[in-house]
Each structure stands twice: as C-alpha cells, then as structure tokens.
Length: 336
Image (cartoon, rainbow, N blue to C red; front, side, top):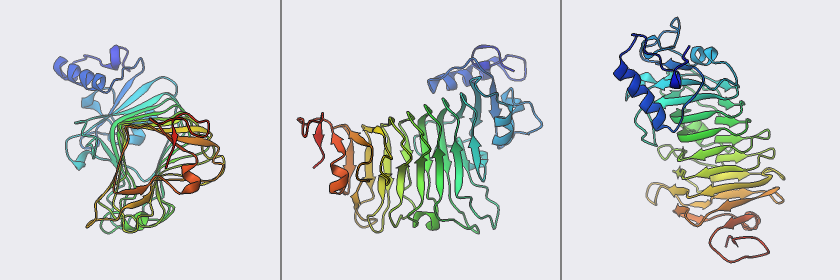
C-alpha cells in the first residue's frame, strides 16, 4: 500500500518520471491524500493484480473499490486512454464508503472526458434504472464522465437515474453527468441525471456538465431533482444543456413540500437549450412545489439561452436572483 506522499511508490514497477507524472496529474485535480492509491485501467488491467501501481492496475471498478478502506481517504485512479476503450463498465453501483475518492486521469475536457464509466456494451442488455448511487459521505469525484443509456441492440428503461446521492458533503469537480442517453429514458418524466434524496445535503458541484444535447428529451423530466429535504447543495460554474421537443424539461425539480430545506444555490451556471431548428425553448428552468421548505438562490452571473422563464408563479415566489434591491424582506430580488 502507498505510504509515500499521494501513495506513490518508486519500486521499479514504473519509472520515476511516470510516478512524477501521475502525482502531477492528481495534484492538478486539487487533491492529495494520506490514504492508499489504487489504479484502475479497464483497457489493460487485471483484477488479479494488486492495483498498487499503474503497471499492476485493476480491470474493474468493483475490484478497485473493494481494495479501499472506508474512512481512510483511499483513492481509486481511473486511467483513461483517450478513447472509449478504457471505459469502466457497470450495470449499477453503490459507492458507500466514507472518505473514498475517485479521480480520472485524462484531459480535463469538461464534457465527455475519457476517464469514463458507462453501461456494458453487451447485446440484449436491459439498462438498469439506478445506475450509480453515492451513499457515502465526504467523497471526491473529479475529472470523470458518467454515461447512462442503451446502445444498439439494448433496451432502455423509464425512470432512469444516472446518479442518486443520499450521502453528505461529497464534491463533484469537473464531472460530466450524461444521463438520459437513449430515447426511452429521455422521453420519460421520471428520468433524472442527478437525484439528491434521503437527506443528501451540503454536496458541491463545481464546473460540472449536467445532461446531454445529443438525445432529444420529451416530457417533464429533470436534470436535477432534490427530494426529502436536502439542504445547502451548491452548483457552481456548471452547464445544463438541453435538446427538447416540447420544452417541458427542468434544470431543477423539487416537487414535494419541504423538498429543499434551507437553500440550493446556482452560482455562475449556464443553462443552454439547443436553438430553434433543432429543439424548442425550455418553458421554465425550475419547478418548485408550494412551501418547498427553502429557497432557490441564483447569482446574477448565471446565463440562460433559449429559455422562456425561470419558473411558474409558485416557483418564482421562492426563487431569488442576486443583484437587485430587497423585495418582500428578502436579500436579492424575487425572480420576475
């Protein structure tokens, strides 16, 4: 196991230059650890390996995750090769270990990074509705792309959820949430890219891409849903793309009373619907229940294109946009 800084051992299994390159790549993600590092290379790895060096990388996410000790700040490093051939394939997965991290080594392209996790390509596969769950607390996921969708010869499902987050204080940095990647899931009102539920709170999304604009969405599905009272979740410098045939989709849905609790914040985010000729305008970005239990805060640096309104009357009464004078005793200005 690694006991050197960042867990990198110069044992002769790889060169000093390689070790330094890996360490630099991890540091570029803004992260160091006192725990162990386990390497995952779906293209060339083997689950009979120890995973402790790139040359001895595991082949599957399950094997790399099993090697990690909860609460130890262990890290799984997913090694990309620039193509989809190094994609880690899963049907469903529960990341339940606290302080256990997953970091991709690839170009930080922000959309469709090639440190990637997706469905298997097996012919005849029926996609699992619940793709990836984060039930652990205090975990970092960085420089990764997750894709959920049925490919050729496979069957999609309704109410497809790319990621369900029930844990607390997790961070997603430069992460691409590519949910609703097939026609079945993209045309079902129950599908989500992110579902924050069960009290999932104080999670942080930084420089993330949430959604696709390559698959046409229909019906009142949502890029993000918060349910069950999830307070203080923050989306900063995130992009929400849409390709819509009816304009009924939401960036955020909080359909139940007391779903939010305290607040959710969108800071410097971009909401971009594919323009007329390809897709319709999004009728309203947000849909909040009456007495949703908190407020939605949106700073004045956020941007929306081909979007008609922030929300309906019930929603707008609970949305506050920075940069205005106080209205109804609230800081900022009530959305108009």
